Image: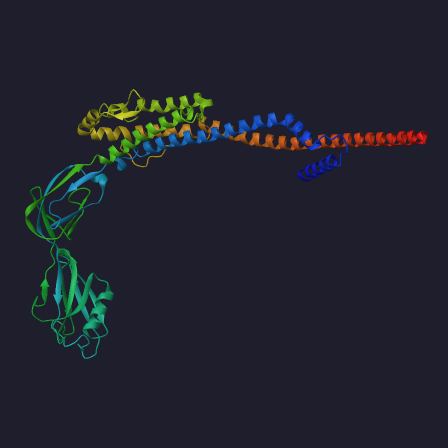
Length: 479
């Protein structure tokens, strides 16, 4: 089309330059006539395409703002996500405290006295001149470990390399719960002993016997430390004993790591931390207000720029979505508790401006006296409950499911968005067809005008011929 138009334009210009034909610029005339015939429809569909493309973006913004509210409700649906406990420990140097399970923690105060630390048995060998000293004249031997205080069990370790280092390797390789190491007692490394160390706890006490001379023959002569349990007193209850210094079942949800004996009680306090719940509710209020702002911008004309909102032509849909979201404030929880069933019961109310706000007095009172009821109302005291669970779900998941339906592929917002996207594709196809039609119309006019020019030129040539003949005859008669 471009080549034909260019060629036709060049031909038209040449004809004009040679003062041939009618003198009319047929290229410009053809273009003007083709545009007059097609451009109004092109402009109309171009405007429709632009407006509809803007509405597609508007529906996307509306969906995104609703999806953020759904996320805010999802952050409130699991009890473990909105509950937290604060643990206060004034003496971490005596007993370090760590949280094993937030769900098991209960508010309260615990006085802990560390009466005794758990220890393991330590036995030393007799002294040797070096780590490689021969112990049994090069012959292998056996060491018997009798492990246990009430019902001991004997484990035999075969030593094939009769040196201190050989004993250490054999004991450690046996994996019987006892470790061995060789230690120099003096600075010039002239005296070495083997240390055997067992696990902590009374039931892990052990003794050693061997057919080689590696220990003192006197009873307990080499025993440096005897295994014992840890022992604490909690809230007046004495002799709470465990085999290790890590106590995981004394205070529900807490792990105590004992490090030193202390006759003075440690007061460990567990209290509710409501900051996580408050942060989640603040986020819900923020996303709701942001949604309202988005809805307003989508349906009103900007006073400064005069630019219309992307969904100003679909205010009815936006109003419907706003009403559905606002209704969630009055949604009754399927697990109402303690007189709490709605968000409004927590002091979450709509201001005159339409935005959400938290009545601090109402909210604080609810937290102070009804925290467990708040959690039940919001979460049904559950974690990771599926959307398809037939049981009661709590207000947060109830609301999330309402919003999920609104955002579904069959929901009103998505349906309008898909419809608008389909229209954009249709307008693009129509514009493509109109552009082709414009080019064809222009070419048709050029062809017609070229034929007209040819006829005009032939007529003009005939006139010039006749004029020449008449002039010749006139001159002949003059002579």
